[in-house]
Length: 142
Image (cartoon, rainbow, N blue to C red):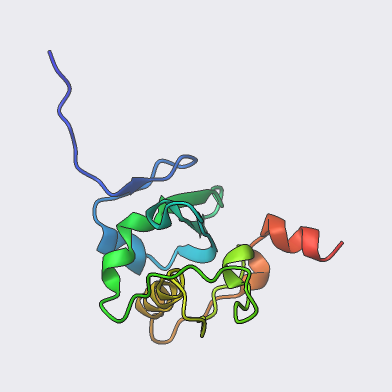
């Protein structure tokens, strides 16, 4: 007998919670977007980092950028300016989720981040970032 395949967007590797769709994943307030790591060879292979803020879990889930890039329909540049004078360096620091003003192929990913953050924001709810241990923040404070 074959197994029945179930469709899902993501499964938490620690607690086993399942998100059936990207929308369910993005809107889950127990998931905190805490980082993005660019892949400077293949844009779509960049990684979004989420922390699962559930008691007893607190796992980090990683999602390839390709799953979110269609959220943005604005201007996309083709030139890579990473590391140049007009580059603020956001893509070189996982914890930087700010917009980017550089005319660069990777700048639109910063807009995708803003869209995800806006979709995650729920009225009347607040998030305390101090309750999340981010490994790269700990290194910065040493």
